[in-house]
Image 1: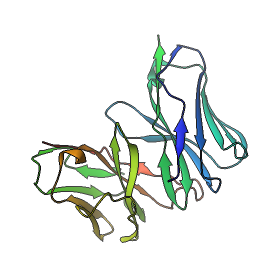
Image 2 (image 1 turned 30 degrees about the vertical axis):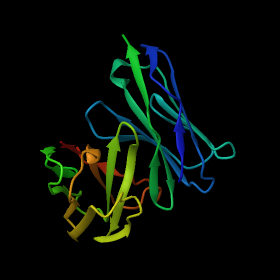
Image 3 (image 1 turned 90 degrees about the horizontal axis):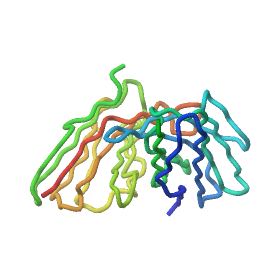
Length: 109
Length: 117
């Protein structure tokens, strides 16, 4: 069983603050890493992917990957109420995605 | 493109009944995935197809579950007989390439919310 663990939520942040989400994975052979956002009652949608160690920035989102520590994170800068959702970490191994349980983020206006 | 289409969006049935969930992937996508999401177990991959051929069904929980893909634009997930513990949201997703290759990713349908009484 390939495990993906996310920091337990819920995470509540004030508008304009930084939300930090963490994820660890058990399979050292994992190749690619994804962050999906899921609004309540909706389907997951991809917001970030990262393949190489280091940081990757896309707008207000930054993904960080450390394969040696088997750790991937997502930072949301200047958090907005529209960022309130559950964020799912997904790890690819052998063409299959394994998802974490998700961290629910609430941005307080 | 209309995206991944699933039907029905909601299904309520009684224990023992047969349930059939349907999915139309994005046109041109070669890979189709079926997932199940519950509060207890999160999002789990059940089975995936490449070019209509089942590649990995190791996530299918038991023989009551079966999936088919008779052509590139249609797939079904069938539960027979259904049980209350099958209650969940079932998502279908499709991709052009397996996730991780290039920048392709899986696009999810809206899901089918199944309740087995």
